[in-house]
Image 1 (cartoon, rainbow, N blue to C red):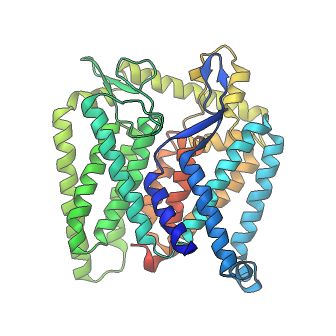
Image 2 (spheres, one colour):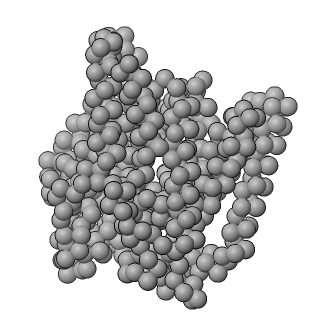
Image 3 (spheres, rainbow, N blue to C red):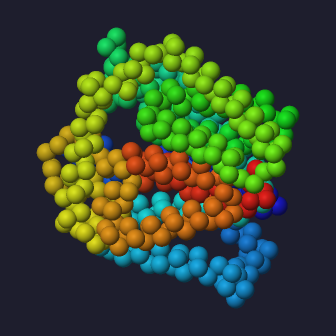
Length: 435
């Protein structure tokens, strides 16, 4: 009974994960502006996650499985992963103690450990296809919400849903200045269109793999959902998400070429792949035809808003280099980048204190050389596990890895951290049950 209940809750969590309802119990401000990266809060889904974790542990105790997990045979079979996990946990402690602000780093590490617990729950789930469908269904809902926001050019506020009001003429909103006016980009339930874009990019590539491995009776349902997801993704106008989706789509095509299928299976899969690709191209063409001026403005780096964005990101790399020179081995501390930036430049507007838009540079700056080596080992091990157990899921894994070179939310915000571990958990699931 407990086992069934926590599994149902985990499916609900994956569907509801994007919603940002939260209780701010320790709000912090820099120069009068809210400081996201120094504040502490409890998300509704975070509380939901802890209920699932507790039920999972109770189920293990009830079924007397804990003895097996810590038994000699299990240790020998997974000693490499146990050893890496112990190093990982030890180094988290060292980094927190070395941080320029232990409180901020503790909050950040707590989010990492929550994500890791979620990863373990997913990896041990008995019916992974249900997880994939719940996760994909949440993406369809977000794409519908984002599309509604774009076409109505209105994002309403609702504290119970975690939505903040946004408008095209509101300072701080993510917009496109086309020269003919300001257009609000699709947010979904996230705090930024770029996060919506990254989230839908992962789900879109996952959905294409699900389509290729689905029964004929499910293909119409998946095709319709994929069209909705692609529409929301496009209307987020996230350039890094566009790039990651293009890369993932090409990688799936290459995967179909190199896998050992017989001729007729290969022909059948490639036929489905090409049909879906043509359909996706038609969806994009319709949107591009109606909003060509927005695509042109978004891809025009001489545009004022885009020029400012590029300039700000270039300055962030300079700041990161300075912090790295000051703290080369252990960094400024997990999650403490914006505090270091404030101490170095205390007169900036509060909203200007943002992490560098590159998770690899951010990790090097916050964790130092030693931390970067540990995280490289963790990432490498996760990718090797995907390659060994479920290689067709590698295109999904590369989506956050690519976007991470252009944005920070995968490593700085609750939504991104949780999504990161969900992606790897789903992709590492046993090959025979994956799709």
